[in-house]
Image 1 (cartoon, rainbow, N blue to C red):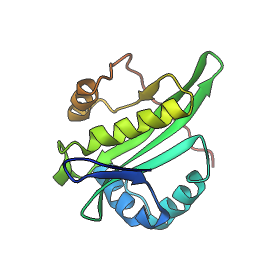
Image 2: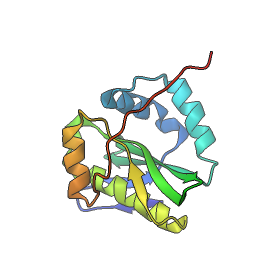
Image 3: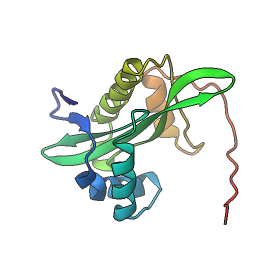
Image 4: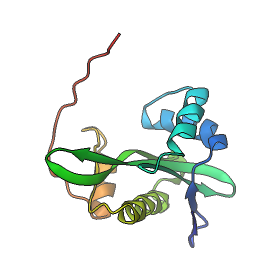
Length: 150
């Protein structure tokens, strides 16, 4: 899947060799991780029809990524959910984020899903403005709880 745009940003499916760039971008998002772990996880996700990972690149350099996957609960029809999206700080407001989200929306439609959702931390006000600008609405606030399973 490749799509070229006027700004020279190309959207394509992620490849295992993108893992180092995805790792650097994940740290910008606030989630430092190990490139080997990202490579292994990406290799697993690439073969699952209910997940997709896309990258934005320009000049042969990965400048952003997005992970979308299918979610299903007892009480709602299946929907797409953005697991994460980040565009390099130097390329924000370049249109790359909008293109990544559009690619996810296309994936969701092709997957037979009628909706995409995403979660965004309270402090990410610039991201919230971006999501609203491209047509997403804030439908609720929530807290996320976790418990490590040793």
